[in-house]
Length: 117
Image 1 (cartoon, helix red, strand yellow):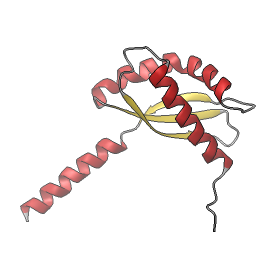
Image 2 (image 1 turned 90 degrees about the horizontal axis):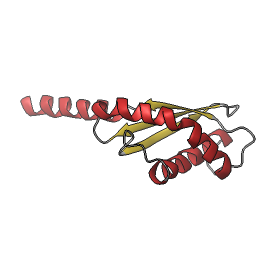
Image 3 (image 1 turned 120 degrees about the horizontal axis):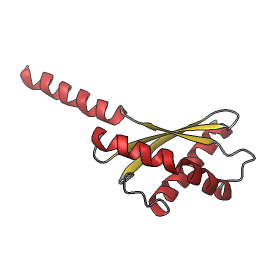
Image 4 (image 1 turned 180 degrees about the vertical axis):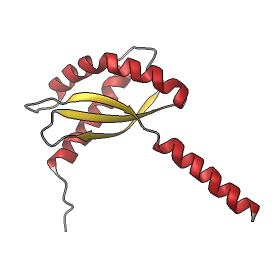
């Protein structure tokens, strides 16, 4: 059976790919630095996109990166309009993704608990 992919998921995936390319090649803001886009959630009417990201330096660089990404959001949206064929290009909201750091902390706690027994 073929997998059921909704159009919203496909659009979110394409937005993530295009944004990653744009951030890497077009944005020269030093505040952004090395970031990884971990996911994109697009609303059903395509008006908003929540873009999740992580930074190489962890929480310390996350605040600076968020400021840079918010400042570049309009530019990124206009560039997306030229790359994605949608009637409505979503407004971008950048959110720091803490799930990786939480996973590392949980892994350390598990390792400590297993090591003590």
